[in-house]
Length: 428
Image 1 (cartoon, rainbow, N blue to C red):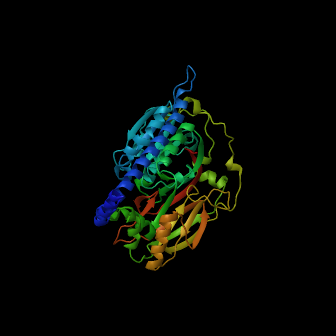
Image 2 (image 1 turned 180 degrees about the vertical axis):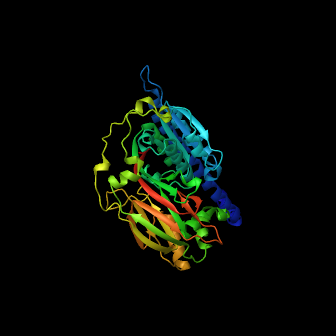
Image 3 (image 1 turned 90 degrees about the horizontal axis):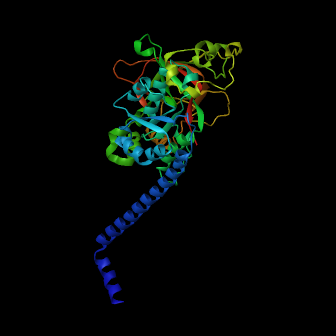
């Protein structure tokens, strides 16, 4: 009893050290427990993947070949380590032949895919939204915009970047589970080979410039304005740690009507003779074409079993109706249903969100905080569209940027076109 009393007296007399020791002990126990849970989780996934790797294949059948496009600079240079810990073991045990190609700078993913010389059964993107956009752009440019060929190369997305907008539509995410489970689930999606089709945005300059001849492709959004600028400024407040995204809204100041543009758009359409004249993806695939990029495709996947629709014979008089409007707003966002799936319409469409022309500082901060928590686009004015053209009022005294899949591009007149169900992506 006297010993217990002495211990309690020492704790009371040295309460600061006792509190620090208790906190350190609890932290250490939690850290060890989390590490143990991660190890058990990874072992379970690896055992499942190994069953695929041990399955017999035909004598003349080649092992599945996977090409991984890894952005080592993603997520503050943590992407490569995370890939090697939680994704590579699963892919390697699945029996597939895995080639890892690392990007070396901006546009690296696009260049790697465009110049890829080996035959592959799937392309896996290990990075964030920007890397995904680069790979999709490289794939569609390689096939000269031929959607039929692009669909034969499924895409896997390993969410190793700071922003991964479409991952919620591909992997079931539970906030109560380990965050690394999203990575292992995404890797298992590749092993299971279940796919779904996602919409693609084509963004092309309308100016007569060399860089405007080839479009940029994206999966999630095009955004311009104060909310976009606050998101893009997060890295400036890195010293606030996990609160840096909140600080970027607090220190942004009162938003102005940064978006001033002439906007023209056409209504959503499932496909008709008017769409057929401007969209390559609606054209029938040539059965006997011998273009060079056919040799990039696996031999077994060159034939499509899908029914083809002759869109040139479908008439939709509403499709060609163009609506023009003048926009003055603090923010303009154009999103796909890949990230905003809730809609009462079954017709493929883009969601357009036009924010208020003015907003108080307090309302701006509230809207920004809600945006961080929910990652949902909201605005007092919204509508659905198929093709849009932006003709911005350019200011000579300052540079303006919009984001395509969270990557910055200088504001220019652009044409934005929805390409419905144009990419096959591995999913749960």
